[in-house]
Length: 224
Image 1 (tube, rainbow, N blue to C red):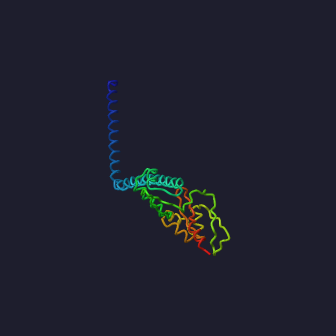
Image 2 (tube, one colour; image 1 turned 60 degrees about the horizontal axis):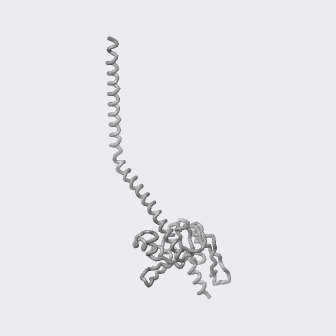
Image 3 (tube, one colour; image 1 turned 120 degrees about the vertical axis):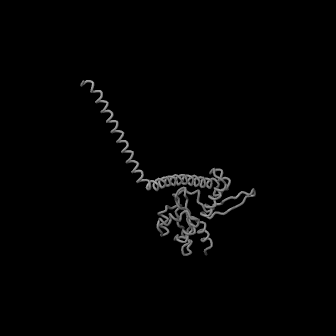
């Protein structure tokens, strides 16, 4: 009789374990449901915020790559064509639409005070005569010293400056330069603060500031 009772005891023990496991699972599901219900208002705000932040970061990364590609193409074409670039050349090389190419070139034209010329075929040519494209960053540009009308000396003007160096030269904070470096009137603004009356332009490709010496040379030629 004792031997016949053992299988029944084992089946009861297994049934008890199964019931305990089932009850425990139901408890966990209930607790999870309660916690989810409590956290639902937070998740409704948190999830869209996280998704929106991720999409914004992705868009910013794509836009930075796009701008870098456009800047590289822009300066490469200017160097190859000695400061002149057509809308068609830029659009084809950068692989963008004509509208996007015109918008970009118009922005750069305002920034660098470029002029426009129309060829006999009707093509618009952007002429960036003030860009110092062929000089190396470590070189120095000799310019006429116009201080107090004295033209006997020659001042060595740096070919390019960092943001910190330009801020020190203009007597402003580096954050001020950072906010204004992409503005179309950067050259005019810097010229009013430069001790030698030199305007400066920002080269995004090298992340340095280049002097625009056309005005300074013109002043030296007009001075007695």
